[in-house]
Every structure is written in C-alpha cells, then in structure tokens.
Image 1 (cartoon, rainbow, N blue to C red):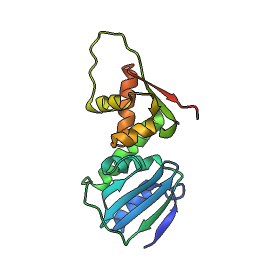
Image 2 (image 1 turned 120 degrees about the vertical axis):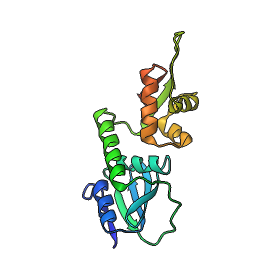
Image 3 (image 1 turned 90 degrees about the vertical axis):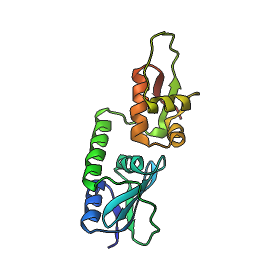
Length: 180
C-alpha cells in the first residue's frame, strides 16, 4: 500500500485512522512549513514519532501543527524502539484537543518568529513555577527565538507553548513577534 499526498486533501487524523485500519507497518513522513516529521507504525499502531523539536509523544502532537504539508508512507524502514504506548484513539483525541486549544488562542506566529525575552520583575511576591516553566526560564536567559528554545528544551512545541504562556501570565517573560 503506497500512500502519498497532501494534508489538505487527506488530513493527519484520517491518515492515522487509515493506517490503523489497514494494520500497516512503516513510517509516515510529513514535510511542512515547520520541517520534517516522522510517525512510525507497527501493525497500524503509532509506536514512535520525530519532529524538528522533539521525539516520542511530544513529536506526535507537534505533527498536528502541519495542515498544508505533504506526506509519504514508507513500508521498508528500520523501526525505532516503541516510545508511544497509548492507543491511537486516545492519541488522536488528545492531539485534536491540543490543536483546537492552540487555534482558539489565536496564535498565528511560527515558532521561528516568536521572540522570548525575560521581563524585569521587582516584586517580592513568591512565584510558583512548573518544572517546564523553570526549564524554559533557564533557556530564555537572553532574548532569542522560541524555535531555538524548543530545540534546546527537546520537549515539543505544545508542551513548550503551555509553559511559555504560563511564564507570560506570571509576567516573567514577554512573547513578541521577531522582526526578521
């Protein structure tokens, strides 16, 4: 079964369901504006994923940022170790929820265009940070693009986006569109 095309005609949710129903083993390559993604299947079940920013579950979710890319399913590949154990149904529900939440937030800036800067805070009030917020705060020492922070943090766009928004809400960082 050769499968190739574009995500506008054949959305990712539909692709994953098709590969699951056909119990295909192989790699789904996705090329889009954010880079190259790969989702690995064993007998139709998602077992691993890779993105420009991460691997495993975060990379699977990041693939849902692509809507206009192209895809190609390849059967003859060396399979990586299984890192994703959730059922395809639960993966698709969670990925769809994340993508919908991101769309509702109205963020239309690509990770490479989003600038993250530390904010001066003279308050003596205690601030509670999540582990992800703390890690990203360490990475945001000097103004830099979120694209670079994502690559250094290695935990995926959606997870980083949640932490960056938490830091912005706590007035610890400013998020702005870089002027390139």
